[in-house]
Length: 289
Image (cartoon, rainbow, N blue to C red; front, top):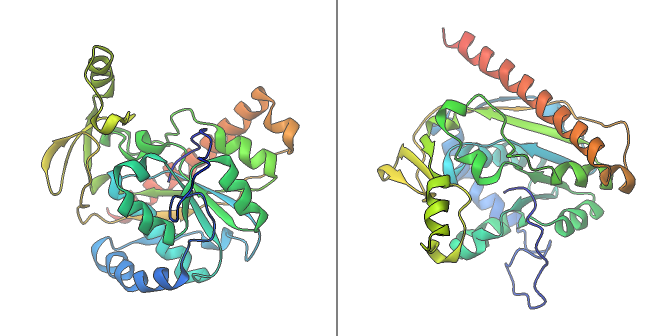
């Protein structure tokens, strides 16, 4: 799940291509719950709080920061928390990078059954019309593969599409932060700039897809590896927190087109999420002393 990719949808569509809101499957979600529960309770030993900030109904934009590579275990654990509290029938859609359909179509098809849709404003707006909650991770691959040295930082890679969406659709932003999943995959550094230079000199992208990030990391099953490969997370404890909703002073289409105002709202969200993450890290460290 990531911030918006502003490409237009194809005219020729097939089932599970991410351009429909009707493919989520509550029965499939319910079947996954025992599997998620085992990881939640015994493998990641999740501690969470703040779920009282989620309203009992109505549209909201969940804005998260995630860690742990393509496995993104904190995202899956938050999904488990959502469904065990609100049930699989309450509508939740997650905006997922369109590259997933190119790189791992079978994985994308399974994600769709859990509510994933293509990360495009059209899909988010359609979901809000159904009074649904929408989840977005603006930092995308750069966030989920950010170096271990940046584990205590909120990182959106400068993407502000989620702010424009919240303003235009007049929905509150509910931040969701996590800590600990950075230890399930230890990213040493990102060498994307070097690889991008090689590409500019003529080296083709694998599968003709710009990965946008090219990490060097330690983790399962590869040991030390390079590139955004799939991984199996190490059993680190994960902490998650749902934060108080953020409301802005102005909403509407005009507000969403005001670049200066969008910048102000972006900094407000980023600052508040960083403060919440700082507080979460401090509480975890105090708890573990």
